[in-house]
Amino acid sequence: MSLLPEGTDVWVPAILILVGIVGIVVPVIPGLLVAVLGVLLWAYETGGATAWTFFFVCLAIYLAGVAVQFLVPGRRLRQQGVKTSTLLLAVLLGIVGMFVIPVVGFFVGFVLGIYLVEHGRSRNRAQAWTRTKHALKAIALSMGIELCAGLAIATTWVIGVLAT
Image (tube, rainbow, N blue to C red; front, side):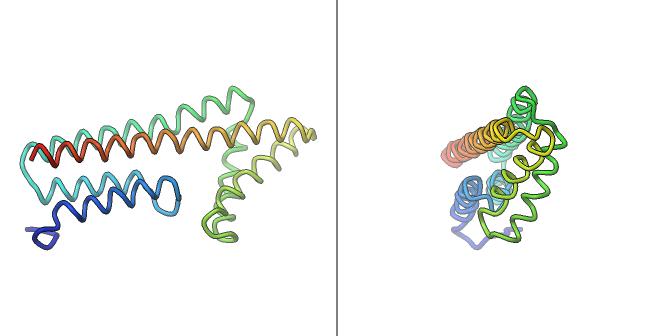
């Protein structure tokens, strides 16, 4: 049973993968997940051992990307003295920010949250701002890791399309 109209078995997954990669940079949708779902749709539509092998390779890239995306920046933040509780509170403020300021609200709320929590702990503006800058670098690193994983998924999918 086909989910897609005839002749769109490559184009629709390609669009999903592209939307997923854009979603990494403009975090409105879970970009990496959408990209992997595009590959899953392609594997389902194409069928065969080769397509499914490429899907599982993409799934492994996805899982590795998600793991590295959370482990590496988090470890660096802890080394700089930013506590996990600070990050949790910053995420909560980021979620509130999403509803207050569309598109960029999460980042504004997240950064403001880190600054406020760190300033409240240390009563030192310079130290709070330093830790906030480290958090911004961690966000950029996390997005870079996710983007690399997304591009690796897209590249693997293109090779899979050519191989089938």
